[in-house]
Structure formats: structure tokens, C-alpha cells
Amino acid sequence: MHNGIDTDRQVETLAIAASGEEIRRACEWLTAALRQRDVPAAQVECLELALHEVLANVLAHGGSGARGEPIGVSIEVCEKASSCEARVKVRDAGIPFDPTGVP
Image (cartoon, rainbow, N blue to C red; front, side, top):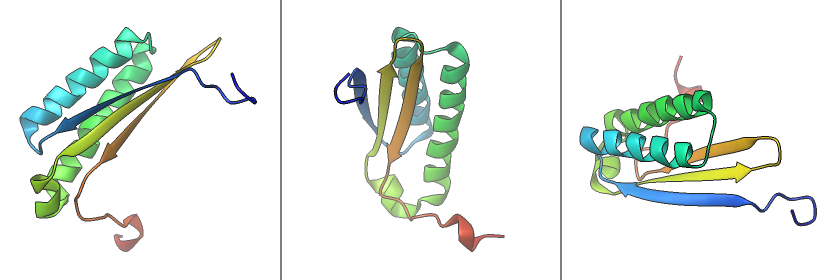
């Protein structure tokens, strides 16, 4: 811990192509990486489901840009004395989605 900021963070990244097979590979990678770091099973399950949904949406709605460029997935795990927190980020070259523009 440095100046009240937890610095015990572990980050891993993966680049995948835009395909269903790669979505499965990314979800398997996520699950293995989180289990290796003792992230609670319920959180692993929620993050895997969320990652699958996000990647499926990128493929379905991201347009040719999303399908033509690698999709980046990163996992950040922060282990604290009494808990473990994990975050997943996805970066793609797809069409931006504005949720305020749909009913």
C-alpha cells in the first residue's frame, strides 16, 4: 500500500480475433486466470457471463471495424487483506454504442 492506494494489482491482457471461437477462448482464459488468483467463484461466473455478452455484442453490433481489428481484453485483480476484487476491460474498434439513443 502506498499513500492509501492499494498497489498489489495484477494485470493480464489477451488479444482475440472477432469470432465465436475466440469468444470461447477469451472466456476460458478469463476463468482460468481468475481462479488461479483465488477470485471467488461467484464473481468469476458473473465476470465470465458479462465478458461473453460484451464480446457477442461487439461481434453482432460493432460493424466491420470491430470484425477487422483485434479485440483487447484485460483483467485486473487487486488482492486486499480481506477480499479480492477483479475487473475486466474490453477494447474494440467497433461502432460506439450510445444507450441514450435507443428506447
